[in-house]
Length: 345
Ligand SMILES: NC(=O)c1ccc[n+]([C@@H]2O[C@H](COP(=O)([O-])OP(=O)(O)OC[C@H]3O[C@@H](n4cnc5c(N)ncnc54)[C@H](O)[C@@H]3O)[C@@H](O)[C@H]2O)c1
Ligand SMILES: O=c1ccn([C@@H]2O[C@H](COP(=O)(O)OP(=O)(O)O[C@H]3OC[C@@H](O)[C@H](O)[C@H]3O)[C@@H](O)[C@H]2O)c(=O)[nH]1
Image 1 (spheres, rainbow, N blue to C red):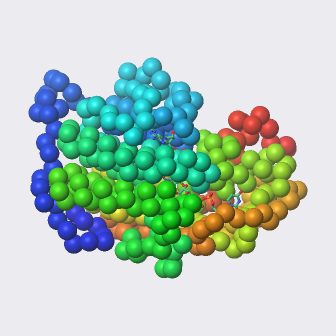
Image 2: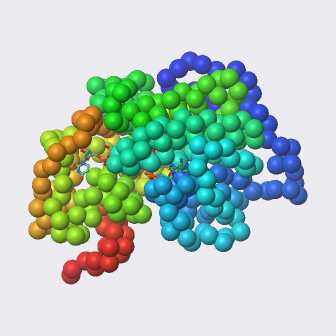
């Protein structure tokens, strides 16, 4: 039974539901069957790549392609251990699985604000549906929550025990409050029904395969630097974020899923940068001639963010390996390839 890692003193009221006995039958199914919702997106597709490396895994992706694409999974389409389903998690899904990585949700602020009612439905109804599925088939479920549950944090760096400083009625609330409700649902299903849960609080993650026009800061700056366009730093530019390379993130998610702790556990890189520092670094590494331009910000932008990863280190034996200065060039290569702009030598 999972151990509670932080934020509470509850114990699970019931043992978890048992999977169908056939799942353990010698000649029926030796593999681990894994559902990845949102698997056609940025982090999801890298997670699928890693899971598919293990020949004992069968992977099913369910995605509505709102911000993800089949292109991200093209190397697996047609593979006998892989299945791709066009599915919206706000509808029920009937599959037989042992693990559910529940990622489905737009993550870039411009996309999650585009249809806020849909974003909150995805977080609340989508998570309820996936918990219902976990309950029916006895699967373990991992939710990709977010550092945004800490809102505009008054504690710095953020520990998992911090309850956050979140505006419940702002333009970001569909996402940050949505994820907070999703975490609540996870713990209620755990306590009430014995579901095996895992909650990752992911901090800003970057890497190849992000949508070029995703709108998040790292992808914006890299695309702008390659296109010789000014890097748009949103005022005041002193706000901070901590950026984790995607391969480190995937490693942390799998360790959390396969470990004994429910979480929530922060997964992120504690290296903290102001947005002006990030712009200067991108300029230096990718295009020293590019201009840096200050533009207006959006409401409720968190002023600082940095994970305390003590729990991830102690409980998962995890810490990030890739520094920002090493990760940015890897992302540059992918963006240049997709934009068709080779590096000048
Ligand atoms: N990338 C980050 O910095 C970051 C930080 C914190 C949390 N997260 C969380 O990690 C997860 C993945 O983020 P990402 O950066 O890969 O984003 P992404 O937008 O690239 O991927 C999200 C995926 O979910 C799919 N999706 C959205 N709504 C859906 C729905 N209703 N039904 C089915 N599929 C749906 C999208 O089509 C996409 O493939 C999200 O849950 C996000 O909240 C990401
Ligand atoms: O072009 C830009 C874009 C963004 N920014 C700034 O960069 C910072 C980061 O903005 P992003 O849009 O990349 O992402 P945010 O940190 O605001 O939100 C992210 O947080 C964690 C996840 O849950 C999500 O991936 C996303 O919501 C903000 O301070 C924003 O004002 C710029 O300075 N210029």
